[in-house]
Length: 83
Image 1 (cartoon, rainbow, N blue to C red):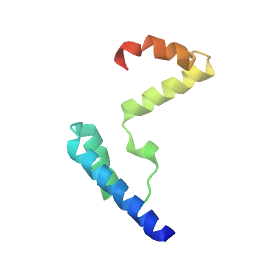
Image 2: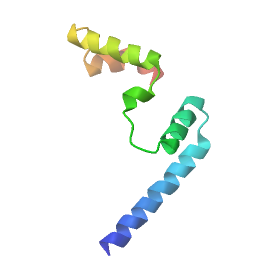
Image 3: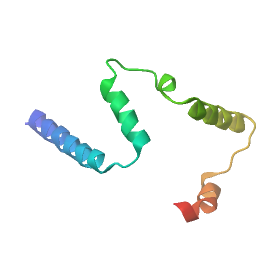
Image 4: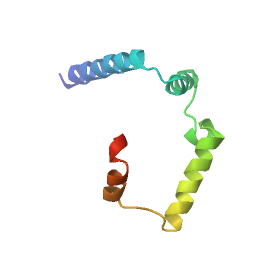
């Protein structure tokens, strides 16, 4: 019985993902999904992102180490108009 429920949940999740994918308009997201589909083995995500993304991550890590961070509460206030 549990196996049947798990299979049912997996099928439901797959259908929800299909619905979401068919509504995507973001070409970058679609390209990343295509790469995931075409990837024959599990790849390290770091090797799959752009140089621009890597630079942004590295900058963020440097900011954290240097203490240039804001609490989540402050960040929410700062970006509230976009959220």
